[in-house]
Every structure is written in structure tokens, then in C-alpha cells.
Amino acid sequence: MGLNHWNLLNRDITACASCPRLVAHCHEIASTKKKAFRHFNYWGRSVPNFGDPQAKLLIVGLAPGAHGANRTGRMFTGDRSGEWLYRALFRAGFSNQADSTSCEDGLELRDCAITAICHCAPPGNKPSRTEISQCEPWLRKTIDLVDPQLVLALGQIAWKGALDECLKRGWYEGRRPKFAHGVQARLTNGRWLIGSYHPSQQNTFTGKLTESMFDDIFNRANRLLRRADSTRSAGSSLTSHGGELQWPSYC
Ligand code: SF4
Image (cartoon, rainbow, N blue to C red):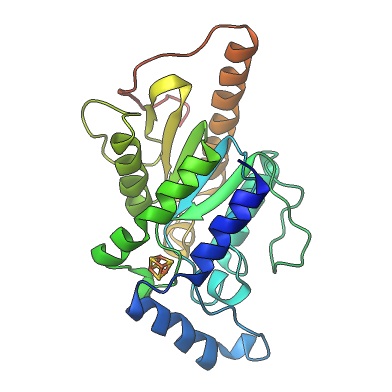
């Protein structure tokens, strides 16, 4: 596993045209453009995964923004949601810089990778159930390849998709946890699944998600990953059965 497999997976994702409605929508946005970006050469198709293929932290978003990732060709790049996400990642030490404006901006993720439930920008930011299920094999292959220690789902739809993947793999047993900001499920073999509100403008403009709430999520991710590292280096393998559902007090 490594960069070559990651690049091949990304190549296949960007060549995918399984959802005619979304493919047409991405092209349409790329040709009509937003006034502010009228000189920009839009990406206008499915957006590949971004980051470190051997990351311990895998972030699962919903779908590319019409004039963000669908424009720049990189997950969460070029819109307000991305500004929030990358600032938080930088503060938590998961990236080399806080700014994310284009594929040529020098941004590198550290021990972190970003994927999505749906790799094409959907009308109204709402992929249909069929489109989500068409895109599910890409999420499965991404999780297979990255083999993350911690999956962070941004928003309810990403939570459902990530949890479904964990259940299919036998990484989680027991009652299906409901989505909430800060919900945390312990998976098998020391893995974790965390849910966070999505940094959409709808959430950040209204104060439903604040920067400190978002920082708490990434600080917790850091603590859980460090704990897993220290357990491994102490020589004891984590073989716990998944199924423990927790809302930590600091969330
Ligand atoms: S949403 Fe996913 S499955 Fe549908 S066309 Fe885009 S990459 Fe393919």
C-alpha cells in the first residue's frame, strides 16, 4: 500500500461517471461559473481524495462545494467550509499551513487524509440516496487503503456513511449511535469514529459550530491517536470489541 495505490484510486475516482445527474451538474457549474471566479478554469468533475494515504486520521465530508472543490479540484479547497477545516487542521498540527486556495498553494496534510461520501458536487449540496450508494465503493476502497485509526465524519450524512462502513467491517457492534456533535464510538482494535457538525456556512454563520467546538474535536482526535500510539509502543495490543458509545465531558 502507498502512494501508487492512492494515485490509482484517485485516478479511478476522477474518471468515474456513474451518476449522470451529478456529472452534468459539475459540468454545468464549470461552464456557467460564479462571477467572482469567471477567469478560473473549473475542475468540474469528481474530486479525488486528498492527503496522506497512510494517515491515522481519515476525515469524511459530504460532497465537493460547487465553487470550492468542484472549482479547484481539491477537497474542501476554495470555499468557506474549507477555510474553517484547514485552519482547524493547522492549529491541531495536521497540516503545514492554514490556507487552502488551490492545488498549487503548498498545503500538505500530516497524518491526515480527506475523502467524501459523494465525490461530485450535487445540486443544493444534496446527493440522492442512489448517488450516495453509487459512491460508496470509493469510500470502502479509501478506508481499505488508508486503514485509519480514527474516522472523523463531518455532518449527519457522513456519519451515517462512515458508520455503515464500520458496521460492514465488523468494527462496531451494538446499538447504532445517533449523530450528534462530539459523538464518539469506540471501534475494534483501538479504532475510533467521531462525529462533528459540518463546517458549512449554515452551521458556522449561525454559531451552531464555533471554532472552539471544532478545535475540541481535533484536540480529541490528537489525544486518541496519541493514546493508541503509546499503547502500541508499550507492547500491548488493543483488541477491544467495538460498541462503546461515549460523549466525553470535554466535548
Ligand atoms: S458521485 Fe461518486 S459514484 Fe457518482 S459519479 Fe461522482 S464519483 Fe462517481
